[in-house]
Amino acid sequence: MIGMLRGIVWEIQAERLVLDVHGTGYLLTVPNGLLSKAFPGQELVIYTHVILREDDLSLYGFSSLGEKQLFLEMLSVSGIGPKAAISLLSTFGAVQIESAIASENVNILTKVPGIGKKTAQRLILELKEKFKGYSALTSDNEGFSAPMSPNHSEALQTLLALGFGLAEARQALGAVRKEGEDLTLEEQVKKALRVLAGGKPESLRGGI
Image 1: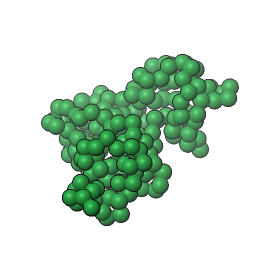
Image 2: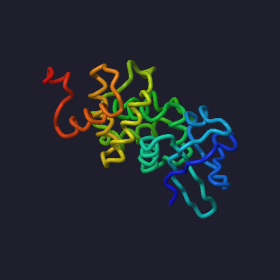
Image 3: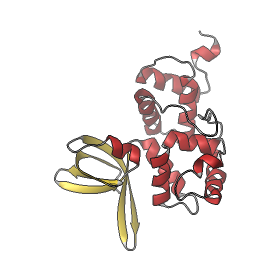
Image 4: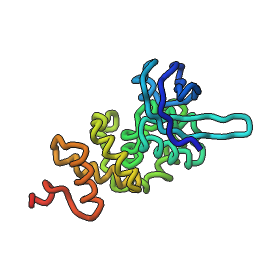
């Protein structure tokens, strides 16, 4: 199984890119968020998942472990295939999808091409418990807040690498984010670990 690739972007196609890894070109289907930022000659680390079928072998790529994990969670839902899961990630991104599922926002999910009401309801029904307690990021039914900062995203990947689940890691970082401070990566991870251990961020305890 190919879990990660590091290489140079060789070519960009519609919904896919070719990553040159020591002279071998890997064709990856990736979300638009990754595709729009990539350019030929750029060095990238891409987290990957292979889907093998009788007549096809496809490689999917993601910019973070969290995004890859959400892709796999969506594939576990009946009726959701790789094309639909990538379409969801391309339209909204991981944070917004989790927010929509946690808040049971069917209307947002059905804005994605190919995702009807029944499919959106099935996504919510089968995945909402995984994001239970996760603070929704929507200000209303139509819009989402800004995406995570680079430090916040890296902190999430660090917690996932330490063995924490996607939902609990995001919930802990959400609690830390409410402090409203410009925290370094190390500070975010330390405070999130404190939350995961049963404590609270300092600002929520009134300081120490």
